[in-house]
Length: 72
Ligand SMILES: [Zn+2]
Image (cartoon, rainbow, N blue to C red; front, side, top):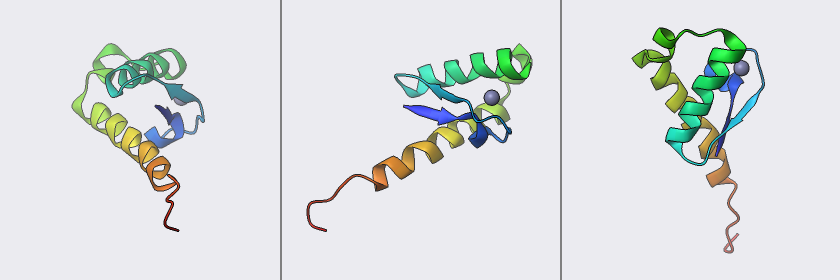
């Protein structure tokens, strides 16, 4: 699974990938720290983590909708 950094309210279109939601959150944290200068404190904030999970949901949804259906 992957998420575009744009979904997190930035103007950076870096795609971050992970095997699971937890791994993806970790990868996003790493990207935000290295590329956007976020501090440990900012990365640990509940608001940021809610936003990251929201962005992951947004990214996951269209792929499910695009799943081909044999009855159409
Ligand atoms: Zn970014």
